[in-house]
Length: 106
Image 1 (tube, helix red, strand yellow):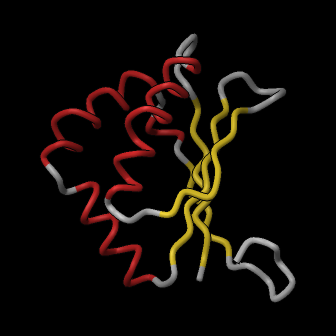
Image 2 (tube, one colour; image 1 turned 180 degrees about the horizontal axis):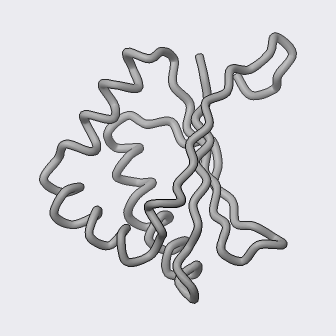
């Protein structure tokens, strides 16, 4: 099992719109496709920061879920164009972490 921490930078003035888009569109859509979303957060000291965490049981599961989400017509035609308007895709940072044996998140 591993976690994927995704760090995004919002375009100026777009954080509230991004949070609403994540909560109303992206997270429900990805959960419908089998993604496990552990949490999502906004920066307290950085108004442009958004972080969310997904959990995968294996690399094979991650590949299958990425395909189930990102290769759909809905994602390509509806979601992706809106993402580009709200976040700076060039600044996306993805960090994969494995929990230790005593981690509460498992």
